[in-house]
Length: 206
Image 1 (cartoon, rainbow, N blue to C red):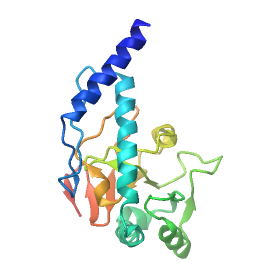
Image 2: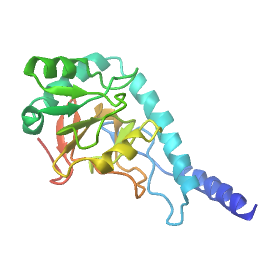
Image 3: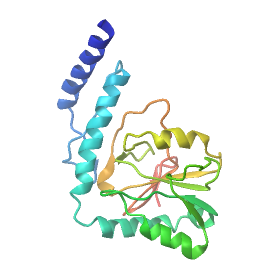
């Protein structure tokens, strides 16, 4: 029981630590922010932070009154990327309430003759896509993300081809300054919001 009690104690300490932090989401500096985890944070504490982030960022998404318009702009920026225009096979996703809507992307692929698949495909091989469009609840400009919590992309992305391009799409208010990173987390090659594309490796926007 000592290990369990220690883990619970770490979570309690972490929650106390976070209560003194101010998390700044982009572009609204008044949104609550999570600073970095304590150096000795354990997996239980990290999981607790991720759950809290998912809850808070889902609320941020749902509060946006113009998600359809923002989604249209995001898809417009996405399909202008050279990597997307050159792709022969693209992995998208079927959006749920609150996520960036992908119907426009699906239509664009069909018009161009680009093969498209969804994560629901049971026989989907990680080496199949040239471009992988990744949803999430929160992202950083460095290309880290927190997903829905099911772990599908955590399992799928490590098997991708080395030349496959990973692109996260999200609304601008989903960008935060910091997220907890674990060994299995994959840094994305690009983030696209309604304001354009962010290139983490170059530290600039396009």
